[in-house]
Length: 99
Image 1 (cartoon, rainbow, N blue to C red):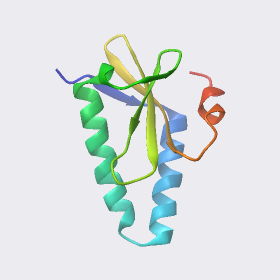
Image 2: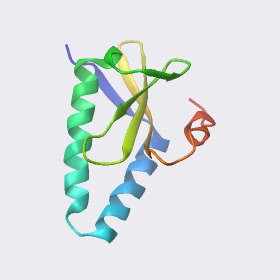
Image 3: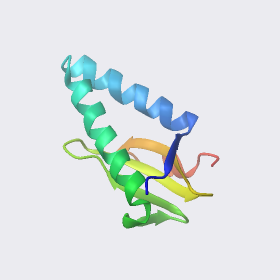
C-alpha cells in the first residue's frame, strides 16, 4: 500500500535550491537528481517504516547517487516530508523547523 506524500513548504524550498544548484553545475544533472528523488519517495511511500528514526518521529531516507537525504514523518496515514537536505548540512537545520 502506498501512502500519500505531502511535501512541506520548507522541503519545497530545499528541493528548489538543490535543483538550481545541480542545473548550475551541469545542465541536465537536475533531471537525474529529480528522477532519483522520485524513486526514493516512491520507496518511502511503499515502506515508510523501513527507514531509521533520526529524531523523535522523523526518519531519514538517502537519495541514491546523490548526497541528499529525505527527512520525513508518518502521521495519520500520510508521509510528511520536512526536508530534502545535503548530508553535509547540520541536522539542526531541519530539526529547528516548525513541524
